[in-house]
Length: 447
Image (cartoon, rainbow, N blue to C red; front, side, top):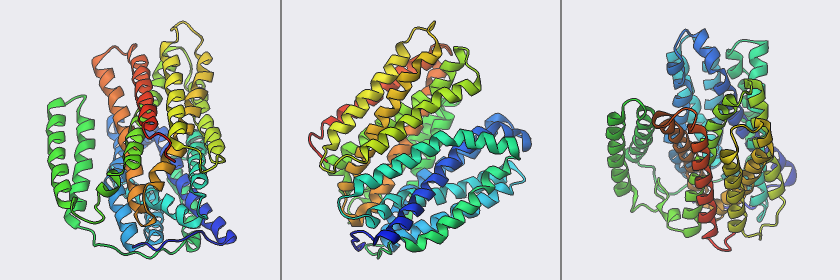
């Protein structure tokens, strides 16, 4: 069992919270700057645009494959140990990425970075929970959401600045000082005592195969649909085998014990739907704004309104009393996100594209209003000793939703006209966001 910790003394708590939030900033900023730099990296490594996308896919695949196992490792060996190992691996892989002489090297280094990022994300909130006093988890999750939103907004700008002043390897080299600083600060984190049952190696392999097959299927679907179906059927077999192997365990790799609780299960379902809706919209919006005549710079500035509004909403929600019913906050957030997306989708094609700025702000406010209380519900449904499993499931739900949203837009581009796809995707995103709000409302007055 993980020993319960009811907060650290104020000075140590400040360093511990700063270490966790800085690590989250490290992971989020890295994703933002790398996405922006893909064309530059393709040119420098003399590869194609299709091949260089593996730099992103390898990272995402590693995170999805490792989130649940890393959560289990945290419960087995202690959250601080797994977190520090994740920071060390992420930092070392950043150095390898900066030194990459070829695409193969860079893809392998990014896979290692993903494993480190999974360790950070799976136990980060568990460490926040152990660091702050009882009753302050909602505020801590709000700080985490605020950090992620601000770094998401800053990522493209930071990437553009680095590429203006230097070559692409500096995008990864800049992770080194922050990573080393976080690694040094991990000594202030609470030293939770691990325990519980041993981790089953075959279950870890089945889990990795499950998510690898799902991602490979999603990548193959637009061009090789038959192969995609075959990969997904194989993924179902891996899932069945994993469920049969883990179902009877006290602390299963897939947290069936937590998913059996209504508040936890609805929070996971709502998270998948909300992230799928947001991702579909964020993928479709640049195409919509490009067709409306905006330059890439104007498009970037226009879309920055969204994460800034998320940050404002997260900061506001973190001040709400813990007794505020999370279900209604999440329902209101889902409704606002759905209304904003529907408004953009239904806007006249002849309208000034800059007129959607208030609607994008409404989307950001809605997502920020949803995210913090939904995560609070998810973690409060888990006992402290199962915080690692809750963190792994939270990250898995988020990445599953993001992958589903991206695949949805890809399918729409393959089956509908290029001009119609962005508005259809925004409409689908609105429906998914509304579904997230309705699922949240079904919890009633849960906190």
